[in-house]
Amino acid sequence: MRSKKIVLSFYSFMFLFFPHHHSLTAQKNQPSGISFSLSGDLVSSYVWRGFKQTGASVQPAVSLSAGNFTLGSWASTSLSDNGHKEVDFYVSYQVSGLGITLTDYWWDGEGAHRYFSHPDKGNSGHMLEAGLSYTLPASFPLSLSWNTFFLGEGNKKANGDNSFSTYIELSYPFSIKDVDLAVSTGFIPWESSVYGPGMDSFKFTSVCIGASKNIKITDSFNLPVFANIIANPAVEDIHFVFGITIQ
Image (cartoon, rainbow, N blue to C red; front, side, top):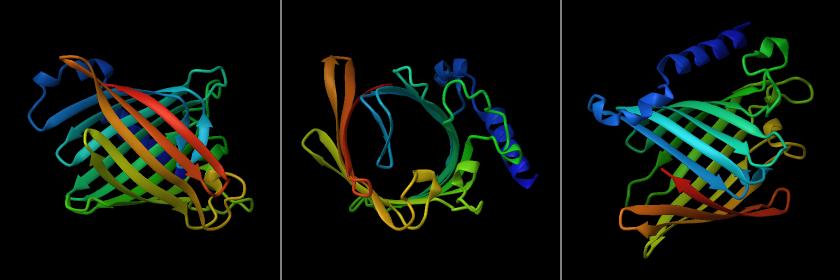
C-alpha cells in the first residue's frame, strides 16, 4: 500500500503543476523567472544507456522551469509498427553544479492500457528513479551522474528483492571549431534487473562519442543535427545514431 501512495502522490504532483500544451505558446505573458521549453528529436534509432530500445523514433520534450526547479516530460514513439512507446515525467532541482532529479519512466508500449495501474496489483509498468549529478566548473566541465531505480516491478530480482538498478556515467564536453563534441562512459556497479539478462555484476554498458552542429538553412533558421557512436562492451554491441532537433 505504501508504494501505491508514493506513485499516486507523484502523479498528483505532476498533473497539478505540469502546463497544458496551449500554455507553451504564451511565453511572453509569463511572469519573469519562469521559462518554457519545447523541442522534438527525430532519431535513426533509440539507444538508452548503451542498450537499443527500438529503431527510428520521434522524441518530443517539454519543460517548465522556475528558479532552480524544473518540471518536464520526455517521450519516444517508434516510427515502425512494433508498438514501442515511452512517456516519462520528471522533476529536478539544480543549484550551482549540483542536480537532483526524480523520474517516472513508463515504457509499456502501445496497447498496454495500464498507465494508471499500481505496483500493488503487480501489473504497473512505471519505474521510479532518483538521480544525482555534479558538474565541475567551466574550466573543466566534467560531469558525474548517479541514477538508481527504487520502485517498480521491473526492478526486482528473481527472488522478489529490489535490485536498486543503478547506472553511473562520466561525461566531458568540448568543442572543435563550430562542432560541439562530448565523450562519455557509463557502467552498472552491481546486479541490475532493469538492464536485462546477464547484467548481474559490474559492467560497462556505454562508451559514447557524440557530435552536434547547427546547419544554416536560411538567415533566420538553423537546423541542429547530432550523431552519436555508442559502444556497449557488456554485450559487445555498437550503435551509430543520427538525429535532428526541432525547437
